[in-house]
View 1 (tube, helix red, strand yellow):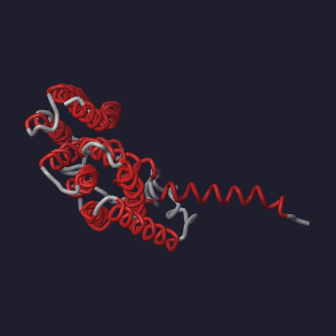
View 2 (tube, rainbow, N blue to C red):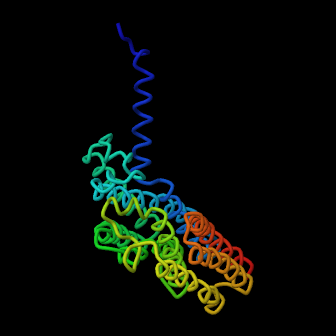
View 3 (cartoon, helix red, strand yellow):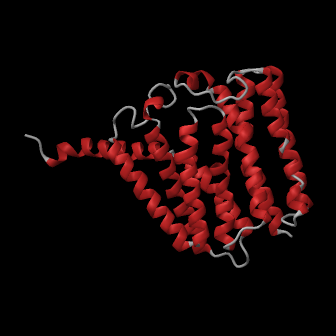
Length: 301
C-alpha cells in the first residue's frame, strides 16, 4: 500500500520540473540581463539620495514584464521551436506545459509587472514597459518569419530597458536616456548577428533568415557586422559631450569598442565558428563593461 511518504519524492520531482519549465518559458537568464541594464540605467540617472524602493520596484516589475514577453514569444513560436535542436526541449514544444498555463503565466507576470512599475516607480516607466512588451511579442516575434528586418525592429524593445530605467529614476526622459538607448541599440546588432551566424543552420530548419543580404554566411554579411560594431566608436564620445560623464568613461568606452571591433574584424577575416564565438562572447562583455564604466565615472563627477 502506498502512503504519503512513498509519494513525496515523486511529488518533489514534479514540483522541481514545473519550476524549471517556468524558468525556461520566461528565459530567466536572458531576463536577468535585461533587468541588469535597466537597473544600471536607474543608478546612472538616479539623483541623490537614491530611492531604493523605486529601484526595487524597477527590478521586480521589469523582471516580471520581461518574463512575460519571453513567454509570449515562446507561445507564438511553438512550431518553429520544435524544429530546432536548440529550442526543441522547451516546455511548450515537448508538451510538458499546456498552452493555457503559459498564457496564464504570460498574462499574470505581465499585468503584475506593469502595475509594479507604474505604481512603484512612475506611470511613464509603466507605459514604456508596455510598449516594449508589445513590440517584442506582437511585432518582433512575427517578423522573424519575414527576414532579418526583425533584428532592427527587435533592437528597439531590446534597447528600451535603459530608457525605462532612466524614466524610473527621473520620471522624465532627456538626451541621456536616448544616448543610453543608442548604445544598447547599436550593440545589439553585432551581438545578435554573431548569434545568427552561429545558429544559421538551425534557423534555416525553422524557416528563419536572420542574416541580412541573402540570409547566408558571406563576406558582405561579415562586413555588415563589422560596420555595425564600428558605430560604437563615435558613440563613445557622446556621454562626455552631453555632460553625462567625464573623460574617464570616454576612454573606457573607446577601449571596449576597439576590442569589440577587433573581434568583428576577426569574423570578417576568417568567418569561422571560432571567430563568431569570440565576437559573441565579446558582446557579452561589452555592454556590462560600458554601463559600469559610465556609472563609475558619473559617481566621480
